[in-house]
Amino acid sequence: MTEMQQNKVNFKNEFKIRLYDFTLKLIKFLDKLPKDNVSRRIGDQLLRSGTSIIGNYIEGQAASSKKDFANFFNTSLKSANESKLWFALLRDSGRTKPQEVAWFLNELNEIANIFAASILTLRGRR
Image (cartoon, rainbow, N blue to C red; front, side, top):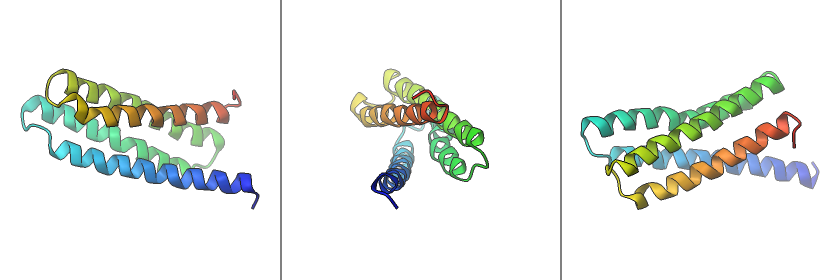
């Protein structure tokens, strides 16, 4: 295996671990949300979109074609962007402190950028 191939394998493994860690932190965050109706509803949406990121990434690893692979990555990207909305709503509605969601929003921006760059590469535009 060449050094470039090894770097690619290492990046994939590190990214999978990063997504897994993000998902674990998300679950812990959601457990601490206030128990009012709105927080619960937004939390449910955030749980769906936030866990969908890694779910679609893992499914994409077993994709049967390059197009299928790109579609799973695209769904992960959309889920990351949707999750940013739910975090912003929790923050801006006063249900959480800004510093409690800052790490998540930053991490989601970085994750979304990785998926976007990967999708562009897969489509031959980069």
